[in-house]
Image (cartoon, rainbow, N blue to C red; front, side):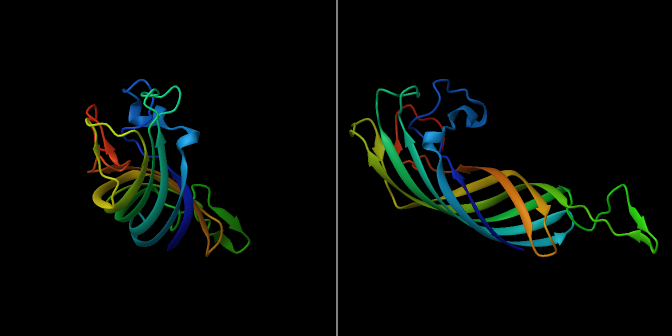
Length: 198
């Protein structure tokens, strides 16, 4: 399968963020003002009805800032970043979208009609590399470390996805995924209070 898509990008770094640092999976850190677009291309190879390998390329543009109501609103730092991720991803389908009869098989005058499932759902995990570079609008401080890039880091993508068969040649899908990086500089800055990778 060939995959094309558009999506959104959020970077969880040292700027912005909810006042409560204990936000579950950073959900409270997601804001519309810091959500930026991404574009997505991939090739998926179905090994069998339950498993697949996918090789993906994603470009994302991100913005993080210390806005009013965020964790460090008085600092007023702003960072924009460009990110390109190449990844190899394993998918496991707990609901297969093909080669599986629905429980209520249909019949006509000639006999049973193959009524394939049109929905699929899966979890995924993989390994990738992310190239990134940032632009900072800040007042530099001696206590911070700045690396606007370009740089490369490993990324560990995990998430879930769903698929809906439109026809023999077209499938509509949606994924939500989290990428854990091995860098603290996706936003170009590391502060003394930083204790997690971006």
